[in-house]
Image 1: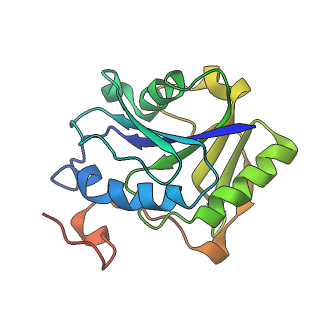
Image 2: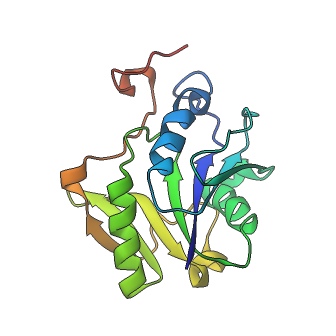
Length: 178
């Protein structure tokens, strides 16, 4: 079974005030290197990103999404379209989640393998990332994303949330803006 990661990194970062994905993406790619995904696709949009380097045994590709302004679903569709026919599932993560845990990816993948379709990590009962989409769900992604789509939640509280950096004040201590 082939699993790819789609890193959503296309947003404008208006609340942050600068392209936060340039600062945070390397940490997310490092976390993905410790996971069981076979390849990584990074979706860029508002800003050009430096082409990612090869991470561990995984290939990392940069995909440009001209439709990024339509919403996160449009960016996700660009990432999914870049995946080969051999890919059975996509692990969706955000470029602004630098504390992503490879164990959370393994946990949601295990549940997806057993129950299929769409599975998401949850933290304190709230839906979060990573999210796993089986290929059968790839054609049902609306522009606004999958926020309201029914999913199977997998508690990952013990692993810690991946983070959601919207403003410089949200940065983990290990990061400095600028």
